[in-house]
Length: 165
Image (cartoon, rainbow, N blue to C red):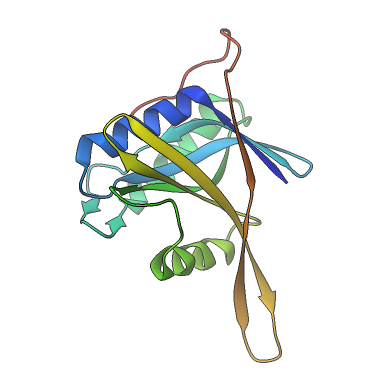
Protein backbone atom coordinates (compact mmCIF):
# COMPACT_ATOMS: atom_id res chain seq x y z
CA UNK A 1 0.00 0.00 0.00
CA UNK A 2 1.12 3.53 -0.77
CA UNK A 3 -0.33 6.50 1.05
CA UNK A 4 -0.40 9.74 -0.94
CA UNK A 5 -0.69 12.85 1.23
CA UNK A 6 -1.65 16.19 -0.26
CA UNK A 7 0.88 18.87 0.67
CA UNK A 8 -2.07 21.13 1.56
CA UNK A 9 -3.28 18.57 4.10
CA UNK A 10 0.25 18.24 5.51
CA UNK A 11 0.40 22.02 5.91
CA UNK A 12 -2.98 22.05 7.67
CA UNK A 13 -1.95 19.27 10.07
CA UNK A 14 1.27 21.15 10.86
CA UNK A 15 -0.75 24.32 11.54
CA UNK A 16 -3.14 22.48 13.84
CA UNK A 17 -0.18 20.89 15.64
CA UNK A 18 1.61 24.21 16.09
CA UNK A 19 -1.57 25.97 17.28
CA UNK A 20 -1.82 23.85 20.44
CA UNK A 21 1.80 22.81 20.94
CA UNK A 22 2.97 21.52 23.42
CA UNK A 23 -0.45 19.85 23.69
CA UNK A 24 -1.51 17.15 21.24
CA UNK A 25 -4.03 17.96 18.53
CA UNK A 26 -5.61 15.80 15.86
CA UNK A 27 -8.55 14.90 13.71
CA UNK A 28 -9.71 12.72 10.85
CA UNK A 29 -8.37 11.98 7.37
CA UNK A 30 -10.59 12.03 4.28
CA UNK A 31 -9.85 10.88 0.75
CA UNK A 32 -10.02 7.95 -1.63
CA UNK A 33 -9.02 4.32 -1.79
CA UNK A 34 -7.91 2.91 -5.12
CA UNK A 35 -6.91 -0.72 -4.87
CA UNK A 36 -4.08 -0.81 -2.36
CA UNK A 37 -3.35 2.92 -2.64
CA UNK A 38 -4.88 5.63 -0.48
CA UNK A 39 -4.95 9.35 -1.31
CA UNK A 40 -5.50 11.80 1.56
CA UNK A 41 -6.97 15.02 0.17
CA UNK A 42 -8.84 16.54 3.10
CA UNK A 43 -9.00 16.50 6.89
CA UNK A 44 -10.98 17.76 9.81
CA UNK A 45 -9.67 18.93 13.14
CA UNK A 46 -10.50 17.80 16.65
CA UNK A 47 -13.97 19.31 17.06
CA UNK A 48 -15.20 21.89 19.55
CA UNK A 49 -15.52 19.52 22.54
CA UNK A 50 -12.11 17.80 22.09
CA UNK A 51 -9.75 17.47 25.03
CA UNK A 52 -6.04 18.16 24.61
CA UNK A 53 -3.19 17.15 26.92
CA UNK A 54 0.58 16.84 26.73
CA UNK A 55 0.59 13.13 25.86
CA UNK A 56 -2.94 12.43 24.66
CA UNK A 57 -5.84 13.88 22.76
CA UNK A 58 -9.53 12.93 22.88
CA UNK A 59 -11.49 14.07 19.82
CA UNK A 60 -15.07 15.28 19.75
CA UNK A 61 -16.33 12.02 18.27
CA UNK A 62 -19.94 13.10 17.61
CA UNK A 63 -18.78 16.21 15.79
CA UNK A 64 -16.28 14.19 13.71
CA UNK A 65 -18.95 11.65 12.66
CA UNK A 66 -21.18 14.54 11.56
CA UNK A 67 -18.24 16.02 9.61
CA UNK A 68 -17.56 12.68 7.88
CA UNK A 69 -21.20 12.52 6.80
CA UNK A 70 -21.16 16.16 5.68
CA UNK A 71 -17.97 15.65 3.61
CA UNK A 72 -19.38 12.48 2.05
CA UNK A 73 -22.60 14.24 1.03
CA UNK A 74 -20.89 17.44 -0.14
CA UNK A 75 -18.52 15.42 -2.35
CA UNK A 76 -21.33 13.38 -3.91
CA UNK A 77 -20.05 10.27 -2.15
CA UNK A 78 -16.47 10.81 -3.30
CA UNK A 79 -14.70 11.40 0.05
CA UNK A 80 -14.42 8.60 2.58
CA UNK A 81 -13.11 8.40 6.12
CA UNK A 82 -9.60 6.92 5.96
CA UNK A 83 -8.45 7.11 9.56
CA UNK A 84 -7.18 9.46 12.24
CA UNK A 85 -4.25 11.81 12.61
CA UNK A 86 -2.72 13.51 15.64
CA UNK A 87 0.38 15.39 16.69
CA UNK A 88 3.34 14.56 18.90
CA UNK A 89 4.77 18.01 19.70
CA UNK A 90 8.46 18.10 20.58
CA UNK A 91 8.64 14.35 20.02
CA UNK A 92 8.91 11.70 17.31
CA UNK A 93 6.36 10.19 14.95
CA UNK A 94 6.11 6.80 16.63
CA UNK A 95 3.00 4.98 17.80
CA UNK A 96 2.48 4.78 21.55
CA UNK A 97 0.52 2.01 23.30
CA UNK A 98 -2.47 4.36 23.41
CA UNK A 99 -2.12 5.03 19.67
CA UNK A 100 -2.05 1.28 18.99
CA UNK A 101 -5.15 0.74 21.15
CA UNK A 102 -6.96 3.54 19.30
CA UNK A 103 -6.02 2.07 15.92
CA UNK A 104 -7.29 -1.36 17.06
CA UNK A 105 -10.60 0.17 18.14
CA UNK A 106 -10.96 1.85 14.72
CA UNK A 107 -9.94 -1.36 12.89
CA UNK A 108 -12.84 -3.19 14.53
CA UNK A 109 -15.24 -0.89 12.65
CA UNK A 110 -13.33 0.28 9.57
CA UNK A 111 -11.37 -1.83 7.11
CA UNK A 112 -7.66 -0.97 6.98
CA UNK A 113 -7.77 2.39 8.81
CA UNK A 114 -4.80 4.72 8.85
CA UNK A 115 -3.10 6.33 11.83
CA UNK A 116 -0.98 9.30 10.78
CA UNK A 117 1.25 11.06 13.30
CA UNK A 118 2.86 14.46 12.73
CA UNK A 119 5.77 15.22 15.02
CA UNK A 120 8.10 18.13 15.50
CA UNK A 121 8.01 21.72 16.63
CA UNK A 122 7.86 25.23 15.24
CA UNK A 123 7.68 25.05 11.47
CA UNK A 124 9.50 21.69 11.24
CA UNK A 125 6.94 18.84 11.24
CA UNK A 126 7.28 15.39 9.71
CA UNK A 127 4.73 12.63 9.28
CA UNK A 128 4.59 8.83 9.45
CA UNK A 129 1.64 6.58 8.75
CA UNK A 130 0.47 3.09 9.72
CA UNK A 131 -2.30 0.87 8.43
CA UNK A 132 -4.15 -1.15 11.03
CA UNK A 133 -5.97 -4.41 10.74
CA UNK A 134 -6.99 -7.10 13.15
CA UNK A 135 -5.60 -10.62 13.01
CA UNK A 136 -7.46 -13.35 14.79
CA UNK A 137 -5.49 -15.72 16.92
CA UNK A 138 -7.00 -18.71 18.67
CA UNK A 139 -8.28 -16.74 21.68
CA UNK A 140 -8.40 -13.09 20.67
CA UNK A 141 -7.98 -10.44 18.07
CA UNK A 142 -4.74 -8.54 17.93
CA UNK A 143 -3.74 -5.42 16.07
CA UNK A 144 -1.26 -5.50 13.29
CA UNK A 145 -0.03 -1.98 12.58
CA UNK A 146 2.07 -1.86 9.45
CA UNK A 147 4.16 1.21 8.56
CA UNK A 148 3.15 2.60 5.18
CA UNK A 149 5.11 4.36 2.50
CA UNK A 150 3.99 7.99 2.76
CA UNK A 151 4.47 10.33 -0.19
CA UNK A 152 3.62 14.02 0.04
CA UNK A 153 2.50 15.45 -3.30
CA UNK A 154 1.37 18.82 -4.64
CA UNK A 155 -2.25 18.50 -5.77
CA UNK A 156 -3.47 20.05 -9.02
CA UNK A 157 -4.69 23.64 -8.68
CA UNK A 158 -8.27 22.63 -9.55
CA UNK A 159 -8.55 20.35 -6.51
CA UNK A 160 -10.41 21.84 -3.59
CA UNK A 161 -8.23 22.55 -0.59
CA UNK A 162 -8.78 21.04 2.84
CA UNK A 163 -11.57 22.48 4.90
CA UNK A 164 -10.14 23.69 8.20
CA UNK A 165 -12.71 23.42 10.98
